[in-house]
Length: 265
Image 1: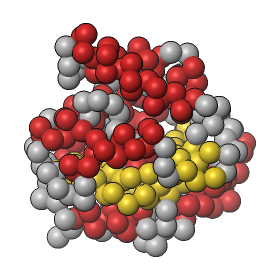
Image 2: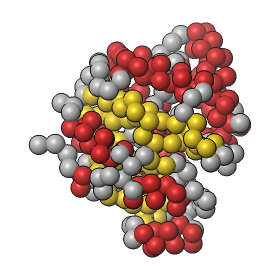
Image 3: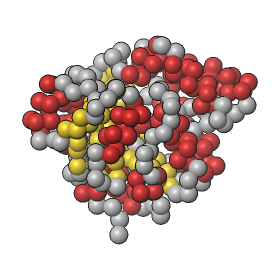
Image 4: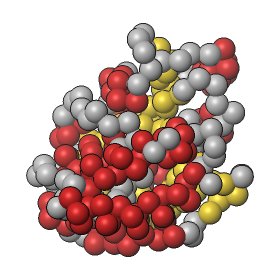
């Protein structure tokens, strides 16, 4: 028996007031296979409450200081399903994401993560080709559509030159990865560090090479802010040192940073 649609939740992490939250929610409601949706936030606003009320989506509010690790773990904890996708409020999903996710997860013997190819949203336009996307697709190519999904070596090589897995494209299989999922102290590279840690577990990383979601790039995003503040650069070097000697890690980062810079422009 595989996982059913009722066993999956899109946990939308909302931060302050986003002009894109409605678009994100509408893309989740437009899935060809309906699953569960919730909104979690540590910075509640009237606008967020209004969207949750309008679409009848449960809204969960975390007390305490906002923080990416605690906020993501809270979003996961608000779900009662074994499959959880942390949807970022600025991003959108293609209608067949949930359908293909269930098929991919259910094709694995012991699924850990399901994740997909993605495009960028820039100024309202979908961008499916640029240098950064090309590099990430090259790194993930050995895992394409289930190939070598159980190989710890291949999974770690796919992560060894950069954060190749797009976080909001990921569905986590909680019984197999354990909770809390996120235990890293990183801010920008919380996801990369987590996927590296989980890649060492026995199980499958299923990469769907079809573009099934769009990551929005804009000046107001947390990713752009961290890049401009050089937090990303410092954390990138530290992550690369998980895989390479320090001198080589710094050399690799020199080239990786050039691709990441496109996310801040």
